[in-house]
Length: 328
Image (cartoon, rainbow, N blue to C red):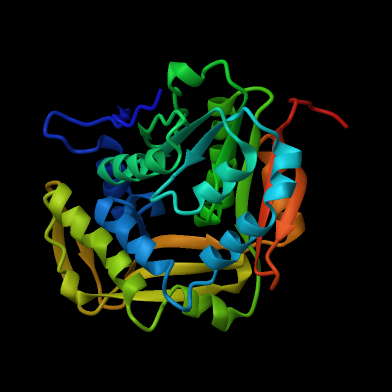
């Protein structure tokens, strides 16, 4: 049985506005360093723009990760096994997912994404590719614990979190998410997760500021979304995309930089941006083997296998849900 109708778990107010989106934006714009969590970049338009980013020459992570998934299928089959429900966190268009599903013969596929229309279209496409595979799309904010469809409740589960999305979060938030994933997936679960690796900073900066300007449009789309969904009046034309390498924290930062002094409103609240001031919209942390393993352990996952692409730009790590313990 295949279902692509979706299960909506996003908390909307009486006007149809996502309460969490409004709360995060208002809180973030009230801080000395204005910031909005990166997950809000991914409405339907943002999700499509990100898919476009993965195709630009400068953006290597998708190609590197796809290489691993394509070339290591036998490894995945051996260490993951068959018969698991694959739960993909932030599934997007699920472009890489077929490579994994072909390797491990899953019992079901549960894509989770906050962009509902994009999610259901991608789920329908994947159902067509795997006509015998039950597919249960869930529209949800995976930063919170998600109740999975009852059809997969008794199946062993494997979370799939590709793309180094974990790098978009500060360490505290990343650890919280990993713990939430463990709660969502349950005891005995596995997690296959992507980590982008530290490399030459010019390569990194180019990947987040491509010559065609696709990443800039992706970043600016957040301001348009705020205007559209939260009754904002940000002057998008007076904002400029900028990618910065922060060596102290081993991360690329994306900012929207004000090109002039601005006064604007969002959801009835007034804000100001001075020329040169920024709204910090995304981090993309880069990792070494030790830092990735430490992050997983802090989140309740024990790393068991690690794979790299041929140029050693990107890694996929398989981890198992750890048994809670307070001593060696």
